[in-house]
Structures are given as C-alpha cells and as structure tokens.
Length: 478
Image: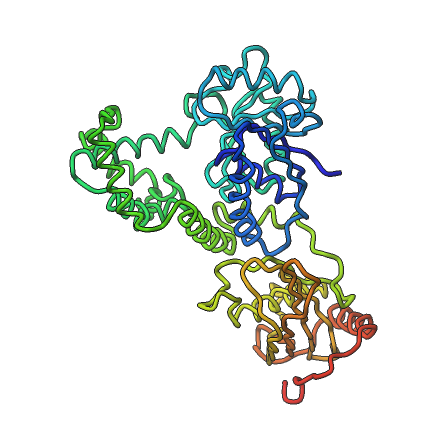
C-alpha cells in the first residue's frame, strides 16, 4: 500500500523532503500558500530526479503522486508522516502544529525540520512533535538529526531508514542539535577571517574543500585525528596536540558584528567566487559532485556510501525484461558515466554488463563464498555492439541469456534495454565468454558440481528465448 507524506512549507528544505519521499514511492501532498510553490518544487524535483536514482545500482520504486497547493488540513488528512518546514519563527511553528495536530491521524509521525528549536519548545503540550532536521539537499544527503521522546523517535527513525537516510537520534535535546553546533563554530571563525582580511571567502572554501573537508567526508573528525596520532592512536594525538587547545587561536565565543560593511564584503567576495553560475547551475554542479563522491564511498561501503548500499540492498530488481529473461541489473545512468558528447561512455556498457554477470554468478552459486573457497570465473573475451544512444538519466535494464555452460566455459549474452519515457529499446548487446579458474594454480579448471549443474539448468531454461542472430565468441577461448 502506498504511504502518504504531507509537507508543510515548500521551500528549499520542504521541496527536498517532497523529492526524497516521492522518489521512494510515497504519495506527497504539499501545503504552501506561495503561488510559486509548484514551480519551485518542480525545480527541486528536476534536480532530484537527475541525482538521487544515480546513486543506486538498482531502480528506485515507481514515483508516488504529487499534489501541491492543498489547504493544510486536506494535505495532512490520511498522512503517515507530516513534515513541517516553515521559517524559523517559533510563533509561526506553534500555529502550524496546532493545525496539524487537529487534522492529522493519531498514527502519523509529526516532525519539524527546525535547525535550532528543541522539541520542548515546539510542543506546547505533550510530546507529539519530534525534530527531524535534515541537510541540504535533503534528497541526496542521508543525515537526519532526530530529537524527541523515545516512543516517537523510534518509529520515525524506522521510516527514515526506509527512505535511505541515516537517523542520528540524540540522547537528549540541546539548542541547535549536533551538526549545526559544529558548523556554527566553523562559520564564526570564517566570518572573523574575512572581517580581519586574513582570507577571502574563496580562500576559506579552498581550505575546506582542498584539505580537511575531503577527510571529513569519509572519516569525520575523531577518526581523522586518530590516524594523525599514528600507531599510538588517539591518546598520542591528544597528548601531542592537546596543549594547543589552550592557545588563543580561535574566536569561537565571539561573534563579529554583521554590519553593512561586513555583509557587503562577504556578498561581493561570494559573487566574485561563484562567477557567472546561477543558483540552479550551482545546485546541479553540487549534486553531480555529491553523486560521484557518494558512489565512490558506496563502492568502499564507507561512511554515507554504506547507508546507500544498505538501502540499495532492500530495492528489488524488476522480474523480467522485454525479452522474457530475468533482469540481472538495472539502474539510472549517473552523470559520471557520461562523456563529452553527453551520452554514456563506451566503457560503461561493459560495466553494466559486468554487474549483470556478477549477479548471475550469485544466482549460479559462484558467489563471494565460492571465490573465498578458491574458485571463480574469469572473463576471456567480450564483444560489445552499440545500437542506440544512451543519455544521463536513462533507465537501463540488463537481461542475461546463458548460451552455453558445459565444462569450463560459460557463454553469456547480455541485452541492455534503455527506457527514457518510451517503450524499452535495445541499446546494446554484450557477448561474453568466461572461463572457470582455480585461484591457487591460476589455471582453467572445472567448476564445482553444484555450479556446473546450475549453469546447465540455466542454459536449458534460456533456450525458450531465441538465440541471438550473431554469436561471435567461443571459437578460441580456452
């Protein structure tokens, strides 16, 4: 059954929440009096549809139904989750929550995107409202700070995990939660560095993105410093650098006066730094870079990439493809797979087929445990036929036909089907010959009896599908 999310406030954060829910198969109703809300959410969704599916090597669920411009009571009616994302004014939030609690089902999670207010401030009575503070862009970044009564935060965290997010449930409430308190410290120091003409906005950003920001993306703060302590670890690091904390380097407890002169200086430097790119172009650049970083982390099953990998494991593959064969791989083509022409680079056709081959190995029983036992299949030959153009964002589905699987050879024929708003079309074929190898001797060998039987059974089953017109491989392999 399709679940429903109600988003109250359709700005940058509310629009990001709408995209996160919608692209994970939820119906979404947005309440926002702004007559431009539909257009603004549409712009966020355009970026989200481009970016979020590109994180995964399996397709996301079919999009839910989006409705924008409903009255609040109608938007929250029947909702499983209500997310408030109105401006940070406590009186306004109180009025919104009074209306939400009067109309929302008792079973619904009622959450606030607030970056600063505590649940005790949001709840006039009871503990119904929890904090679910996300990070922009909500549809890409997994972290959500969750604060509130345990009976409320536990079901909220379960829903957020189902959306591919990482709920950080705080043990107790505190002003500005956790992440924004850390950001506030860096932000204050950066403002002083600009005010005192030590560094420009561009130089400060370079200090972050060219240095410690890269380390933080994969290891955070404490694990980074643990490595800095060498083999002796964190205790050695603290002994070596701890005394520096007594030195008056920073101005973390002082706030520079944001007078007109400082605002003008920061604005001018920021404008010069960003050049001719408008906000939408910067968002697209940010998202493409985040997708590339997150996909790299996913490959290592590290940091935010591990969250995506865990979510991906819950996403089912389509059952069968247009040719009636089982689907072995499916994904939306990510931006990092494009070449200078804007379409998929030739190497990634092989990558898609290779992922399908990896999945087929699991089906046959030649999985990670089989490899750990000293046996595997190696690719001996491949032939790719490029039949039609594939662009970024195209949904790619790979079916695999086993043509032969007797003895030491495994002959596969992958078909890459492209969908981009039309009926699936055959975009490419990849024919592959694999040889079974003993990993100890590195020589061709026979597979186990179980794998051999599974391969022969698969070949027999796939004979129901017409054999490809042109089979090129197998004459020399082995």
